[in-house]
Every structure is written in structure tokens, then in C-alpha cells.
Image (spheres, rainbow, N blue to C red):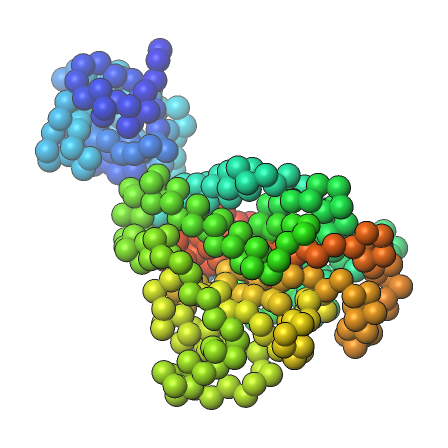
Length: 432
Ligand code: 4AD
Ligand code: MG
């Protein structure tokens, strides 16, 4: 038996077809049973008529409940009244797996849905998000490979921190007390630019963020890149290029899914068609003061509420750069033209979706690096391997990290980042 996907069957449109999938809806009388079947490609109504089957077989059909799996063969035809415009009149059917009282229904609360995440994945909404997620991952790999980057992997068990001790997860590593889960690949990526020059990765990162927000996961997918011989502008250009490539692919391939999610593609288009807004931190403060009546003292980091206000002033992604040294990580390069600031940048998403990318040119002065490590309370000796990158043939270089679920959240217009990943991990949520 050759099975067609539901989409293929509808494209064929007439004649005999065999399909298989799961029961999306069902209703029946003593003469007819209607089953809307779904598979990964779509939904289609099937009608099982009593007159065509023995009493016993028809009773079987009557037992079919939501989410049972079935194979159905019959004649397909256009039917304007059917949910997807086609109907199959069944000649044969097999129930492959029964389903007994599938627990999900409309209007259930978030907690219940998260407890049943393994089942929620089957909903049309989650299926649409997962398809977009697949496009996003594919497009990122494609962008980097087309632009001469090698894919490279760093360890998840790490012996040093990079993005601040407060969000480090300690790992139980035999009897060791100084092993952490990766916050970023960065300190293990920089050594590799001396062999591969241009590298990228897609890997999980871990952050012990205690705050419960709609933007933070404790485990998220991090798309990071690092380039030898780069300028600070190169880092920003690659970030813009990669996101534009993702947007292009999603808009080409996922109109149907955006539609299911009721996401207006017009919200995404400006960031594809126009250059991203590029401003400095100091200009950002000026804009906040003049246009939003928000006063931020120079030297303070931008908070979520300020980033959100800033995003409302532009219809594209904003690249905000040259933050005060004190608010950024130890490895960021001091700007020779304004040494109060570093050559670091954040990409701020439109519509209040927050920071998508954090990147920078890397400091190559070994003494400055040591000084900043000590200021952070770190022991520079633990970083010997990293500091060696500045000892043997150091070159200007830089890179960034993109939070893939942040990007997916914005693209899909989600209320909560939890829906951008199959099994979300947050301080309260680590099951199933
Ligand atoms: O800005 P961050 O902390 O930068 C770094 O980790 C650098 N070492 C990256 C690099 O230069 N290679 O994190 C990068 C991005 C953020 O912009 C954000 O999109 C995402 O990672 N991110 C999170 N996403 C989901 N949940 C969290 N808790 C996140 N923390 C950071
Ligand atoms: Mg950041």
C-alpha cells in the first residue's frame, strides 16, 4: 500500500487514495461517521458510511476517539463544506492505535498544558511553531556554511565562567566542585579561530536565571559565531546577515504556519527589507529622554523596560553598541576612540521581544583581561588556557551569541518563550 501525505492526497484531488494520521475531530450518527484526520502536512475530512461496512466493522469506527491513529483508503473529491475543502469517502479503514479520553481540550490553563507537554506538541499551534523552528535552525546552518564558516563544538562541562557567576549552573561532576554547565561556547571557541578562522555552532546553553519572565529559559539553544581578523563592524554585519537570511526563509516557507499562529508577516518584513537601525548606547539614552521621557543615568545598563521603549521607536531590529565598560562582560574590547565604552553590541528585537544577540570585539590586551577578571572576583590562573590565546599570535577577533528561542518567539509572535522550544526548562519547570 502506498500512503500519500494529506497534502499530496489533496493535490491529487480525485480518485483512490490511502492516507494515515491521527483523529483531529470526530462526530457520528448511526449511519455515518465523520473523522477529520491530521498528519504533519494538513487535515482532511473522511466519511465512513455504514452501508459500505459490516455492522461489526462500523461499530469499530464508532469507537474512534480524538487522537486515535488510523489508516484510511477511499475516494477523494473536492467538497466546499469540508474543513480543508476535500473529503475522502472511505472504502477501508484500520484503527492502528486506540485513544482513550485524550486529556487536552480548549481553554485549559498553562500549568495543565505544560504538565502535558508531550501531548501539547501535537496541537496545530505547536506543530506550526515546530515547523518554523525547523526552518530557523536550517537557515542558520545554511547561512554560516554558505559564508565560509566551519561548524565547531565546545564542551558543555566547563571549568570557568564567562557570563557572570550569578547565572552559573554547577554540575555534579564526581567529587569536583568547580565544574559548570556551559553559559556560552565562547572561551572554548576563541582558541579555535587560530585553526579554523571562521566558526559557528548551534548548541544548548544553560543559565540559572531565577527570575520568572517570558524571555528566559534555563536551557536554551545558542547559535554562536567567532571570526579571526574581524572588525567590530564585521560582527554586526554577520548578525544582521544571519537574521535576514532566517527571515527570508521563514517568509518563503512558512506562510501557512504564520497564518495558523495569526502572526502578521508585515511585522517581520521591515527587518528583512531595510537595514537594521544602528545606534550607540549614548544615542539610545538621548532617544529615551527626548521621545519617551525616560531618564537613564549614563553608565547604567538598559533594563527590559527601556529596551522595550526603544524598540517601539523603530520598525526594524536595533543594533545598540558601545555600552559602558562596567555593564558588560570582561572580555569585551575597550573602544580606542571612547575608552569609557566597549565594542560590544546587543541586537534588540522589535515589539518588545528583547535582546536577540549579544556580541563584541574581543579584548586582546592580556593585562587588561587579567585586571577585569580580578575585579570580577575571578582567579586569572583558572583562565590560563584562555589567556594563552593572547600570548601566541593574537589577532583582532570577535563574535556573538544569538538566542534561538528569542528569535523564534519574535518571529512567531509568542506570549512566552516557553512555546519556542519543545520541552521548556525554567526554574519551576523541569518535567516532563
Ligand atoms: O548576551 P549573552 O549572555 O552573550 C554571550 O553569552 C556571549 N558569550 C555570546 C558570544 O559572544 N559568543 O547571550 C547571548 C544571547 C542573548 O542575546 C539572548 O538572546 C540569549 O543568548 N539568552 C537567552 N535566551 C533564553 N534564555 C536565557 N536565559 C538567555 N540568556 C541569554
Ligand atoms: Mg547579553
